[in-house]
Image 1 (cartoon, rainbow, N blue to C red):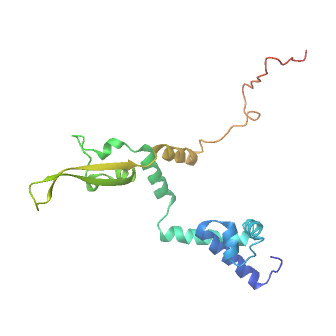
Image 2: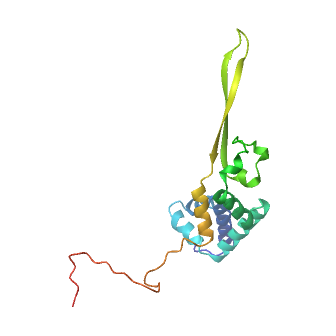
Length: 181
């Protein structure tokens, strides 16, 4: 990385492009042509360069626009999982609604659906078996994870330094501790 010619700049741009693929600095450095031996250190160091960060930001912004990834859309999806009401998946009789009848927020809560037909015996030899019913298993997304993500967005995970906090400071000493007089 000592050379500063056009090839060094091209190599750093290539690193940014490779890094945007999987956000693995070591592998991106290797794919960009840096030595395997020094790839871990190199990748970490390359991420500190302003031109690399700027090029990476352009790549991510372009991908976000082309895939319609927005802060609003992402937050709306997280909120659908975090605040979704499982009751929205069912009709008044307690039956699972067909997916087409669920609203967007209800569908966002669903991680997967399995359908299984239950068959009875056939009516006679050579006849098809009768379908007795169907079991649908609905797997929901992790509501607590959605709430945790909302808390992160709202900065509710801030840890408070007790020395910086105003108010009561509590000191707990072991019972064998002799306080100075």
